[in-house]
Amino acid sequence: MYKILMKKIVLSIFLLFSSSGYCYQLKALYKGSFYQKNLLTTDFNGKLLQALVYIPNKTAKAILIVSPTIVGVTPIESVSARYFSKNDFLVIVPLPFENEVNNLHPNVDNFDIEFLRPAEFAVKFITIIDQYLSLDSELPVFALGASQGGIYSLVIASHVPRVKAAWIASTGGDLPSIYAYSTAYKIRLARARMMQDLNFVTSVQYEEYLRQKLQNDPLQLCSRVYGKLVQTISLKDSKVPTKNQLELAHACKPDQLITLSTGHLLGTMSILNYRANILQFFNANL
Image 1 (spheres, rainbow, N blue to C red):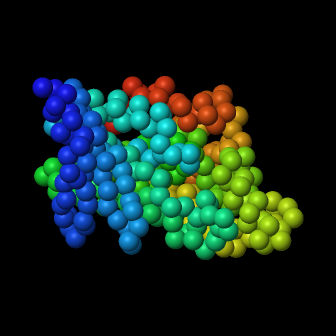
Image 2 (cartoon, rainbow, N blue to C red; image 1 turned 45 degrees about the horizontal axis):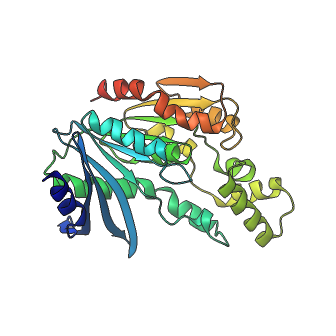
């Protein structure tokens, strides 16, 4: 009987709804003892936009946006989503969207255009889920992310008034410097492509060019963050250089600052190691 029910859930036709002018589809992927995992599909200016939505079987006490790193959804986000949904958080994991960094010939003008999209997408997902589940429009929202996901979480925390608290890990500010010196593969590849297109020889030239072009930066968000903020810093990081993480901490003055004697990978994985602390932090700010 259970297998038949699961088959019906997984193979069922997408449910089509309209929410505040949004057309979307919600497909059940998994039904467990603690939560139901769904794929939410909608659009943004004619382009596909998706998120994984973990709906707790009990009444949700809050919404949590878990933003993935630059490599996409990994066990860090999946395990976090399951953990928090088991603790009665409705968890939304936005799937990667088209990003200028991934283009063959990146256009720096689009970097600023993309900067606020995580907040725009989060609001869209929240609005859809609010109406679909008839949630309280004032249900608290929290943000969690590491590396690029941390930047996205900071964008969300500074542009979505319902956010009560955010936890970010291995995240930095001063994007021109990060783009110019990060050892992260996708950033290095984009840097090489853009420097070739611009006939730049050194990363210093590239950095100065970006300083002239980029208007938005995580450092500018600190003064308008809604709610509390915890930041963890990786002290041996080259992908989001430690100095950039320290600059962000200096600008944001988080309510709690945690330093880790690790590199980038273990710094991002700290979200898993600290998940009980994160849960306690979020619960304290409901």
